[in-house]
Image (cartoon, rainbow, N blue to C red; front, side, top):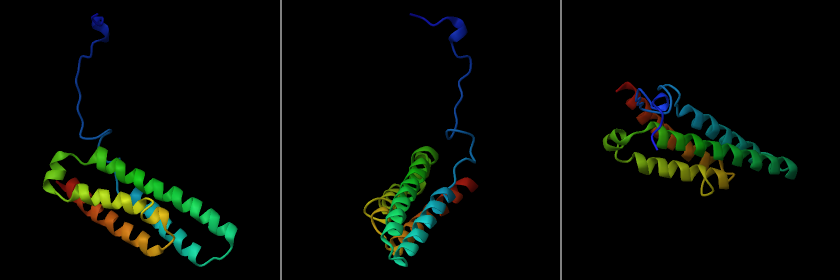
Amino acid sequence: MRLPRILTPRLTASAHCDLPCGVYDPAQARIEAESVKMICEKYQANTDPEFRTRAIIIKEQRAELVKHHLWVLWTDYFKPAHFEKYPHLHQLFNEATKMAGAAGAKGATDPTKADELLQKIDEISKIFWETKKA
C-alpha cells in the first residue's frame, strides 16, 4: 500500500545530535557527581541512622543521574569520528559509568570513590570540549 502523496516526506534532514548542538554538556554529570561527593562527606560526619538512610537514598539517586548524563553523551553526542580520534573514549565512558554505579560511588559512602568519578568526568569533559572546538 502506498502512502498518499500528501503524507510522503518532501525533505530529508540530518543532524549531528538529537537537537542542534549546544544541548549536551558534561557539566550535568559533574554537578550530580559533586552532589554524590558532598553527600558522602555528610554521611561520614553524621551518625544519626535516619540521616544516613536518607543520605544513601539521595546519593544513589544522584549517582543514577550521573550515569544517565554520561550515557547521553556517550550514545547521543559522541560519533564514530570522535571514537576514532580518541580510541580510549569507549573505555573511559565504561569506567566512568561503572564508577557511578554500584561498584563505585553509588555503592559506597567513601568520598574518594566520588573523587575518582569526578576525575573520569574531567577526562571526558576535556575530550568533549576538544571536539566542540573542532
